[in-house]
Length: 82
Image (tube, rainbow, N blue to C red):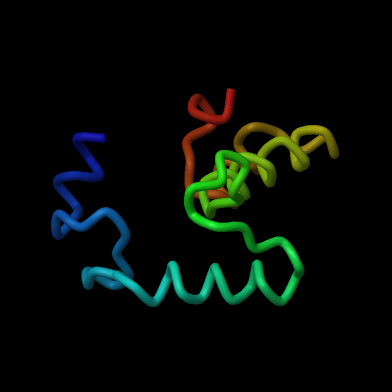
């Protein structure tokens, strides 16, 4: 996390050094709505980008990918995947 902080502009989500704000939430909500999976923000079972990342990791590992391959795809180290 120290490395990420050093490389960051201090925003939670960035692209090319610029913060991504409302557009990510709006786009993700739109995708959930199109898929018929949208739920209100207060729903404890609400799907978030974070949960889809973990689902992707689980599915890739179940498919036989190595922690290194998975980490490279989702932006984690192999140690974080393990």
